[in-house]
Length: 235
Image (tube, rainbow, N blue to C red):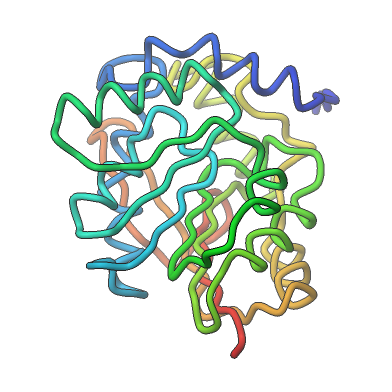
């Protein structure tokens, strides 16, 4: 398996190049549209969203942020890619959604905040960054006591490599080639350990099963490819 070292700048540039694809349901990021209902379902199973302060970290063009806002959340979305933030702002404005979007790094953002969040979501981001443990620690600092953190990523298994990279990027064309680096996939035990170190308790671990032919996803007990995690901050 080829393992490629990426730096932060190259990852941002990769998603900057996808700026026209965010809200095209048949475009290069179509799988995000397909899995979004399942992601929202999972979050709603674990917590309420109405009138809750919600932070979407790595929000991209706003696909998940808008869904969270439609469920009643008071949403802030942050991303380092300026073009994605511009698209997110324009799309929310066109659909009369009040979402606070900011182009910023999460660690810089945390240093300027004097308010904490009830819910933080960080979906499909951990496998693209160099230090996920540091990110989880920063996210914990931004949570209110008893607040909940939702993570999703790819497991570091052979099956995840075959389906998440070989099939998704090269055989079926579900994602742009080079989207994922198998070396950055994360085992649930690793995330759980980093979460404990950051003062978070694991409430739930579930799989996300994606069917490319039906263009749908569902929550499942199987976690050997995509998985979601719900964590709670201690009092």
